[in-house]
Length: 119
Image 1 (spheres, rainbow, N blue to C red):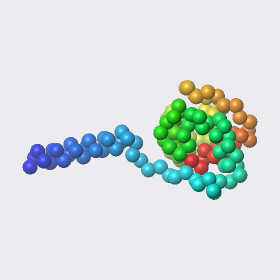
Image 2 (cartoon, rainbow, N blue to C red):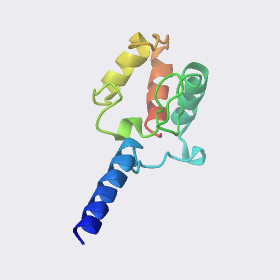
Image 3 (tube, one colour):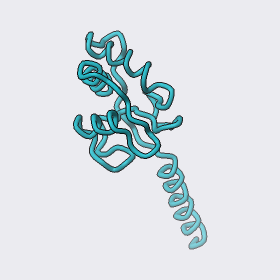
């Protein structure tokens, strides 16, 4: 009996560790494109031109950079910093780590931030 209980406990701990390692967490869904405001749609165009080659928009799985799903809805970005508009702006315009700086004008930046909030 003790052996079965111990085996059940070990199995439960192993399953919990596997789920934690796999990142099993529910993230809020992205806003459907059909509901985008004009600003969000323009931001999606900026994203496709400047960000898409390195970041998946609707996945947390990384490409060359981290996936961006729910980026503005989580407590912290992959760097550990909170995903405020100011921090996102700094990373976008100045780069961080392997991410190069991105040259955007104010309108493009504001549109991109609006789009990132839909993810």
